[in-house]
Length: 284
Image 1 (cartoon, rainbow, N blue to C red):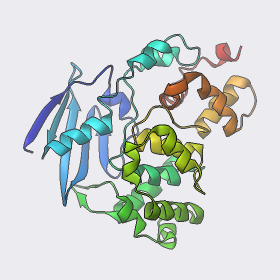
Image 2: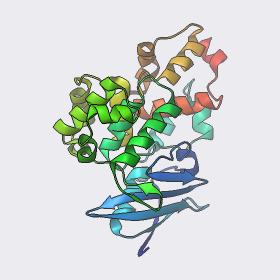
Image 3: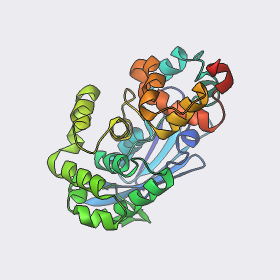
C-alpha cells in the first residue's frame, strides 16, 4: 500500500464501539481494525485502518481515495460532541452516553448499498436481512482479497426482481429496489438536504420511515433521520410503557432529540441492548 495517513477524529470516537456488528460483504471490522475493498475509477483497492490507544486512526491505502473512504465510512469528521453535551442528563440516554461516548454509525461506500440494506431489512430478523444483503452484494460485483466492492445502482439495476427473489429478496422489495436503482441517481442524493431526500424517498412504494432512515444514516451520513419505527425501538417502548407499543408509536421516543434523532435512535438501541436504559425509573 502506497499511502499512509494518520487521522484525528473530530470529537470522541471509538472504532471498536462503532464497528460492532458492522462487518458485511464489503468490510471486516473487528477489535478496533477496519479492512475494506473499494472501487476507485476502474480498479479495486484495499484499505486498512486501525485505532491507536491515543485515538488516532492510522490508514494504509493504495491511493488518497482510500483515505477519503475511511473518513466518510467511519464518520471521522462528524463531531457529535454537541449531542453528548445536550443529552448528558437525558433519562433514557444518560448512562449510555456516559459509557459509550465514541459510538458513530458506520456508513456504506455507496448509497445503493444503503438502499439495498434498507429494503432487505424490512420487517425480518436482522441476521436474515444481512444474509440476503451479503448474497446480493457478492452476486453484484467484483471482489478483492475476499471482500467485494460496494454495489453501485447500475449493478443492482441489472438484476430483475425475479433474479433478486432467487437470491432471497421478497418480490415487492425486489421490485422497489430495481425500480429505484433504475430511476434515481442515488449518489446525487449526497448533495441534497436531508429533508428533501427523505421527502423524495418516502413517496416511493415499498419505502417507509425506517428504510428512509437507513439510507440517510448509513448512505448519506446524516444524523437527523434514523431508525424510526425500528422493531428494537418498539420493544424498548413496550418495556418503558408496560404494554405492547406499535412501531409508529416509537416516533414519540425520538421526537425530543430534534436534529439528533437519527443518532439518538442508534444510541437508544445500543443502550437497550446493553441494559443501560433505566426502564423502571423511566417508566415511573
